[in-house]
Image (cartoon, rainbow, N blue to C red):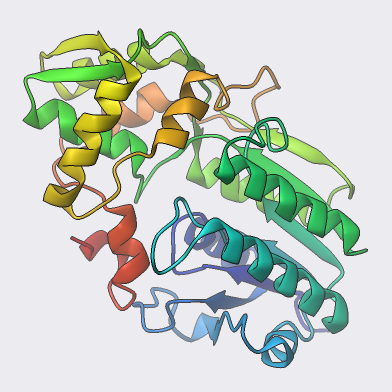
Length: 313
């Protein structure tokens, strides 16, 4: 009897790549649906690569044929001329319908902490709409809700370290008293793999073992990479202006106004039990010599689709 087939959206990316490593190590067959079929494939012929063909539902259904589980990591972080939240919501509905027609048994879906509690923010509203579409589709599913992920190819923690290394002052949004529960990407991958076999119908907050106020997180990173900096509160509008002006210098959208609002509301925090064991403080300590030496561009990863994440500039 052949090993079960898992389809992963974005297996050449961040969370999807960590998951694919674990699935292949467990003996599963893995196929990816990707918007970046030309990106270097570290898995060789062990990973079957097909396009994430939202415009061709028939092809999408065929690519999901024979799959036991669909692991969905597809989303966009901000609106851009090449992609936006509304398109991502529609595309996700197309994907779920193709999975239903293809007979996929289960969908493991990556959402966001507090989806449905901040409809005034387009990112969170879109995440809630995708969850609604998944529930309406009739396929058994598990919804995983991370807040901040860290680990290899990390963006947020790496870029905090990058800013600390390069600027004499690190500005907080407000006083920085809001909290986060970061989860290591490998722990997230383990949770996704386990969700493929456990009870269906669950919604799980995917959070790590450590909770930080944002200002304490920044101080911890600065201390462990060995850089002394002034860490100062500033009005949120001023922080947004500074990052908006700096964006063109790194050819990226560093942070959006909605992300700042969500962070300051505590939407990246949860009181749920930890779903991973990797401590951010221990990871930063181990990665300190290289953490933040290069800027990690989210926009670059979306537009340089034939380049491995580690080589995006």
